[in-house]
Amino acid sequence: MKILFDKSGRPFSQREIKSELDIFGKSYKATMNNITQRIQQGLTQVIFFENVSQLMANFKMTRKGLFHGIKYLNGAVQDPNGQIAACWSLIGSDAINLKKYLLQQNVSNRKRILVDLSAQARNQVSSDLWIMFKKLLSVCMSEGSYGLVAASKILFAVFPDIALPIDTVQWKHLFKTVDYGDITSFMGDEIISWENQTGKQLDSCDSSGDFTLVSIYNVMAMKARP
Image 1 (cartoon, rainbow, N blue to C red):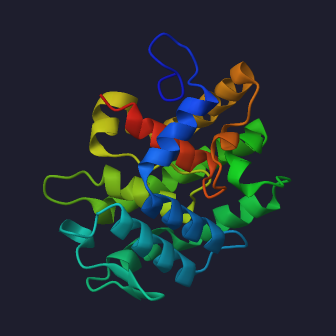
Image 2: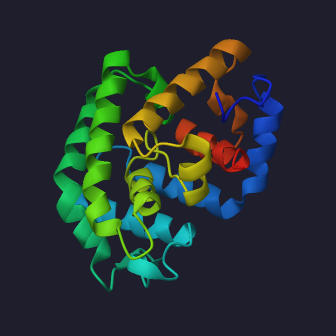
């Protein structure tokens, strides 16, 4: 347990996690609220483009490289090099099918879906994300980059309730694996363990109501970077 627990194995308190969420910034909260609201009832190509463009810009992935120039302004997406379109062509149908699968599950609070799924469904979700992640690498890879960071952030933009964005330091020194399915499973297991040990729900740390469990976990993963 590396993210929601300190080095001694003690779970971070509700107060400590809330403090980290408050520090992280209004822009992140607003972006999370926007992309989560769009994806509530289903996934379309339009929603895919909107979520990816807004999140990649917010995460400062559009200043250079493959995603340079992508913008989301006044409800309009600018994808000058067709990078989002390339991602959609590879995983669009897979993403729609996974979203349909999630909507079919008997989970009332969509922001908690990662841990409220059955064990079998959670395994299916991890497997599906891993398949899409590997497909995305072919269009996210560039000179000097294996595409791991961008691929994870695209999945987070489309599935903010189940997919974790992972930066370079986290890949190398925190998770120490490139198996995105394993990381998804690990995240679910750690959140469940934290909730069992503290007797609280992780989303209770978010007073704004803008965060999914995964977006809370992401904030704590940023804190845990060496």
